[in-house]
Image (cartoon, rainbow over all chains, first blue to last red; front, side):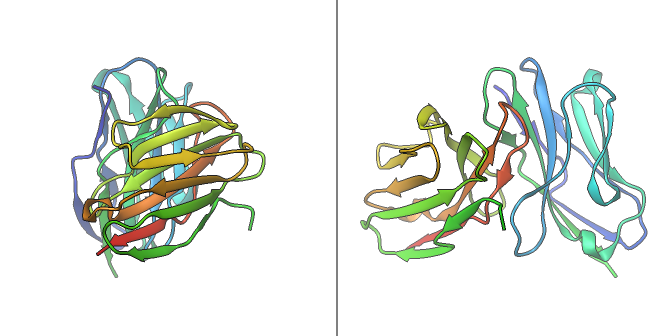
Length: 113
Length: 113
């Protein structure tokens, strides 16, 4: 079955630390991949997306993600986090056979000031 | 604000009552999606419209759930004979291209007592 999984449920970092959040997707044909963020009290916002081309994609607020087809992974990275990055992060995928987006269970990121 | 809007933002109802939610997508978007999100989980797909046609429904969408998009603009999601298990955040999203990024509204939080 088509699925997206996130390994970390809760990550706690200090400001200026580097971030990497894991995401794996199942095989199911061509897939578009996304990272969404939900800041406290706000709605889901798109951080970045991968459709094709350069596997290293850059998003807003200094985030980037790398599509590694051989590992079925699309990990999110940021070299130096800020307190304002405290949020819930969702990896998601859209497969060629359907229009819907399949979400992972989310990773809650807490940043210590 | 030209984003996706949802109404109401919060709804408290008693078990067995009917509820209806409304979603207004971004005006130029012809695709509209409904998702449900429970605590600690990512959004789960419920149903999807392209213009006024409902093209896909999840198995999560029991017979008590019905969605419409009569003129291809706003959409309504009705839940009949609500159950406590229906308590969740109901999210609406819209997009202008198939399998493209979806833009989410703030959600309607339903509490069934």
